Length: 292
Image (cartoon, rainbow, N blue to C red; front, side, top):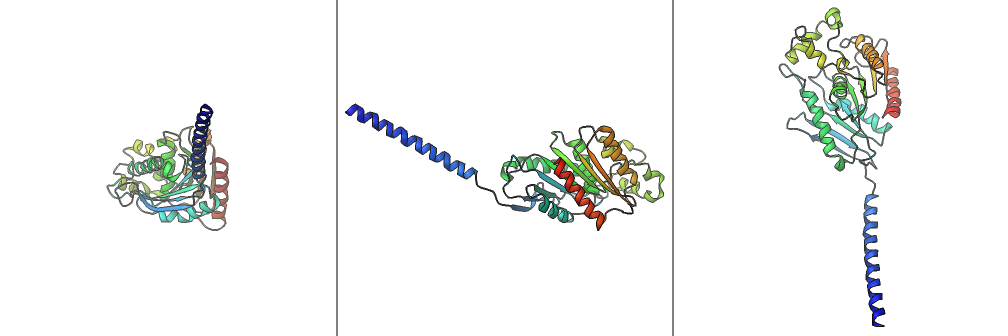
């Protein structure tokens, strides 16, 4: 009888242990099933400079396995502008793609004797590294889609085509972004004659004397067949970007077999409103849905 009692006691202990472990496991599962609420963090520092900040908007129910990230890059000819300039695009993306995270970035601005290259690409690389290091904290993936305007579009394409060594960029949108800083129009067309001196002023590099420098920072010249799907929007009366830049970029992507879409708006300059802006939004939304 005593032997039977000992056996029962051991059985009871084992049962309690199993129940305890099961309870702990169940509690852990419950914790893992908690849905994260939407949140935002503004002016997150990624460096010591006052311009090295970004805003991040994190969606409800995000996970580090499913939540992709838009990175927005403002324009301003590399010397001006602010992430606030991209707030309308950020709000539109939040509404249309509520399951995506959005990172709206600032970067160090160029000036006379302060070249944007490689400084601003270095900033984008640092931001991507920061996002990767915080993927568990933010609960986001390492899958990125860039949306840039003007100089921000140039930087988005340049980073994606040349510096994305781990192929994390899955989509790029260029809205009036420079693609070829060595475009013949900058030399031969009087309408753009002031652009090369501006390049020289901020880079400190001779435009005619060192074309290789400008080729190396031109998306048109550095893009390869492995580039991410790209959507391009341009106006045919842009006073800063010759029509050839959008046309030639589209042709180069086609030649390389890179998925791309290209829209050239008649009568539009370096940006637009009204029906064409609605058209841009519709086309960009469809492109994101298909490719990102």
